[in-house]
Length: 112
Image (cartoon, rainbow, N blue to C red; front, side, top):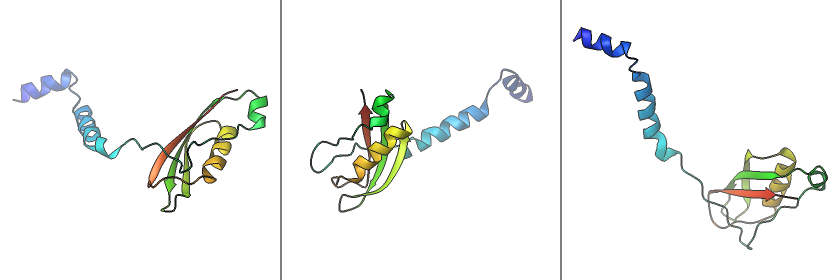
């Protein structure tokens, strides 16, 4: 028995790798994709900043929103994007009321 265990460790049997895999598998349901945000009045648009347009800055901004019961944005978390574009996206979502959702994700694409 001791000989088999010794041979297994020499072959590089990574027990820690199995433990990490099982841990990630167990945590998978906890990491859920958030639903997209839906504005009450229809489409959601952000104003393209003049500075970004002149500098030809393009890109995608992703924001995670926490929505209050009345549809107003309680919290904005930046998931990615150029800081100049992020500011415009944040200003846009703060002016809109959203349909009932505790949290959601909004994506803006800025193109010249």
